[in-house]
Image (cartoon, rainbow, N blue to C red; front, side, top):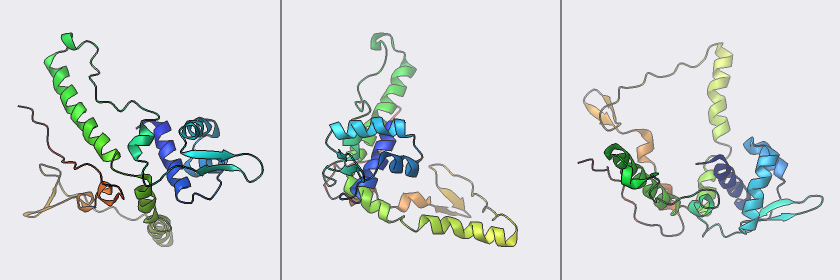
Length: 204
């Protein structure tokens, strides 16, 4: 994901969380550590697409003007990037077998990514953001405070060895990585998204 795309998504999530609030470019830039010059270009693009509107004068800024329940992450990404899975080989007629093999894999990855982004709305992202408000800072501050009090840094737990497929093994039982049990954001979306099946690419 390009930097402009990432900035746009972050700004839209921030604005969509409170559509009535006016937020200045400098305020958004400071929050997400982005230069005002770069952010202004991104906001202009979002403004032309109708996702945000600007208000001039004292107390002015940008506010969300789109439909958070209908606007997907893919809609935003397509404003800044080419999301097509079309063949990018310079000359397909001269492409080698390894080039075609890599193209097949990357094309399928891109199609799955597009389907996922297209099933997640800004409203879903706002809901997801709510889980971390006032939680992440406290969670990060607790170990640091304990380390300062004790005069030592918290020790990192040893990492279990990885087995085939990405699962970690403790004794004879396979432990699924923590992220694998999380509910996909696409399932949280208020709009019905496509049925996405993650499957390995057949290399035979």
